Length: 342
Image (cartoon, rainbow, N blue to C red; front, side, top):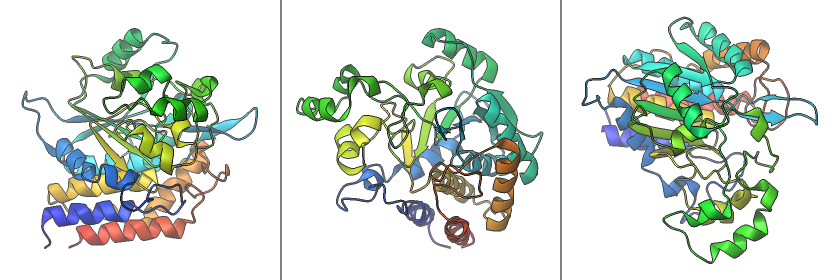
């Protein structure tokens, strides 16, 4: 059997390809993939490290990216929810309790996924706080409802872009960034949840980024972000100038919220699957058919059918993710399963 570090590196490489050509892998010498290349292993080890205070490991998994279809309608995309169900199943296998979060419409899709995967009733589903427009009140409501969580994992969950003030608060801030920022980010796009094309979708989402942004004595000991475009929670751990220079509209849409670890993948679901595989590898656990691509397709079909999910790129209710045919996703799952089968 290859050493653990080798298997974790193999999982990272499998999920870090850029089929959508978003600029994640360019330039070769420094890009979004290479910038935090050790974070997949870091995140997995954090999930597998017992709490010194003796608290049971409870992992909050947050997802849900709402994309507009036209001026009057929209839906949550398939990227994120499927990976959330996948990670929850892996955590259960090694005795870690997952707790899933989403907006009310998304909970229907998550419940369908849990039921289809055979763990319905074993995982708690929680709706994000509503009608809480002040950060302190929001954070208190979140933790009261969720209970003590040892970790938070955000999978394809949008977060706010930069304002000039928050950009200047970065530890790596350079004064020359000001000119570029003012050029690429008009005032109305600042401190907003933005899609890859720069559309403002803030009002469709609960402001859960406050839980990551403002530490609480009841908060998690480690936070993890999983994303594929620069506009997701956790991507603030990557320098603004790198995202600005490599991803179209990157300087405008870049989420300013960092996490302790950030897993950048070609598709966020792949990052979640790689994280799940890394946890299983650390525990030396059998994946038990978790990487069965046909079963994953069936789970996604149930979530699309019952939960009204859409492909975030084509905007259609299909069993595809980010406009990619299913056989590409199946190939990624097969490769990861082969790593764990070693």
